Length: 512
Image (cartoon, rainbow, N blue to C red; front, side, top):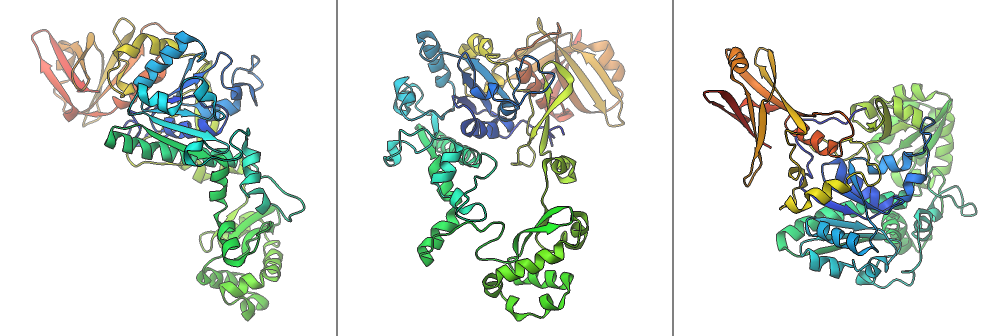
């Protein structure tokens, strides 16, 4: 499923440049959320690259094992610059990137950035408006010195220490980790919120901002129910299996061919459900008349619900319960791929493989949607693919609006201009030449053949599309930047352009 562009405006985060020093899951997930929506994320990698490049799984036809699913999923829409930050020249270049960026993100163990001379204090001297985002297991001393500050931490450690594992499973003798890397993903999600909030404040005050998420802290906040249960009742919550300590029926129930979920909170939904079940012991037993009574008698009630749901298939239960009470089938990943909701809401992205436009990778989509703004699904970067782009263009970038930093030149690109009329007639012309107007806002000026243009002029134009193509086919290090420019120029209203008729040519000007 290809990411929809909606009204085909640029991503809502266009103009934000992010230097991403993070690896594996938590930091890359945070920056992926931003990159999907148009932020320019420059992934800074060592000569070996992010270790997720080597983590697999790999497609069977990827004999060189270049493209790990782990890496692809988290690093689409990003650029890659390989640097050795212990090398003086590379470190000096990285500091130039800092000067022209909005955000820096890292998820090293505490102390690593200090040793590189890239602490928040040092980085904010280079760029006084920088937003500096950090994820670690236990945080820095800035917000309170943790006794565990030097401990390494991964997802399972945060799940354990933050209380999530103590609440998961069927009993407290057989602890169970949550399947996905939820400590990493939740921490990354929180950091993306923190980065955007900090960008607003930095732009308002002109001062650098430091934002931090400790994975241990993140999981404590996720387990908020356990905190108030212990405070209010002095009870240490234990695993509840597939049920809920305060609600019933609420959890996972059997079907003939799998499982389904039911979540009854309000009495109104209970009244609907009991009429659908319509057995005497459910309809008429006063033990289930209120939320508190159902919670008090939840073991017995859940057994009765299980007996009823077990008589039907998942599809039959969809027909009986879907849209009437809070209900859903327990889906495996194949069923997710086949679900209309997933297809229509673009929750599986298709990403082009570098070696083949016919073959696509499929990864989980971005759940955050913005009206009037699209999300993107550009191919993840080859290690170091964009180093030359920044080495050769960095000094010409005078603002932190990275999408305007590269302007195709006619020795390397040709520009096709497509006019559409209100009666659906189309004229395609290749610009005889094009140039860029240097001003506070960039403008593209295309020259097209007067004779060809005038022959079509009797029709009333409604829209114009501009599209840049490489003159010589082959690998293009600027492809994702040009793709975004083409997207921005793909559906311009006739009122968005100016047309000047000279003696020898037609000049068409459009703001980019």
